[in-house]
Length: 242
Image 1 (cartoon, helix red, strand yellow):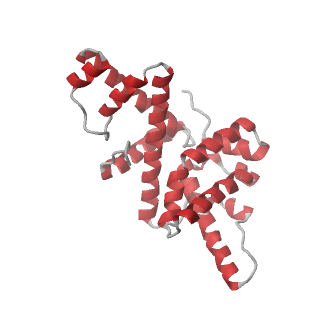
Image 2 (cartoon, rainbow, N blue to C red):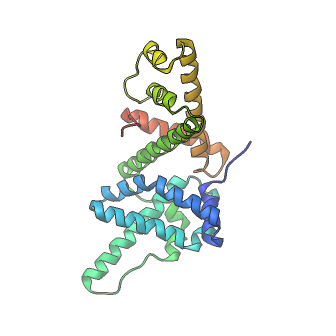
Image 3 (cartoon, helix red, strand yellow):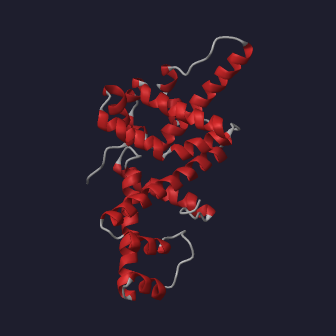
């Protein structure tokens, strides 16, 4: 079974040897998962501008410290690692601000703290904060997966067909009738039904590929997909408009 490079391995390559391809992939990762990180910081009481700055600072800190490349990639989900690392980062940021108010020396996030793998893997956070982070992460996974599917349609010159078919995705806008959509697409109802089935299969494959890059072993993929799906269904999430 093919198992893609995980974000763990990309992180190691990017931070230890400055590998250009790996670093570019990680910069894309940072862009993609900016929202769950930013939202988590906002939920901690920071203003919008503060959350933006802290998210940027946190991601830059990850990319700049080669010590991260020595973290044990077998520890599990990249989602859990990021949340734990962010919780530690914010804790030290609070210490730094308190030190500034007292007029003392500035506190800094140390490499030793980031190497504390127990702290990263098992952050002591209120359950509601962790669940909300995971839910936003799930939304991000779905959006990224949908973007993968859309790119395939655009590259094939079928962007118009994609715009029609996406209405039939779970959690989307109210579905049109198959007859109306088939007429709009210039297809028979049977052909449209086949296209809808095909796109749903493509989306499932895209979700699987996206999740595969955020876990440390193939056997974790289905478990992660089930967990993220359950989070979204608990809220009845419209992932296309959330």
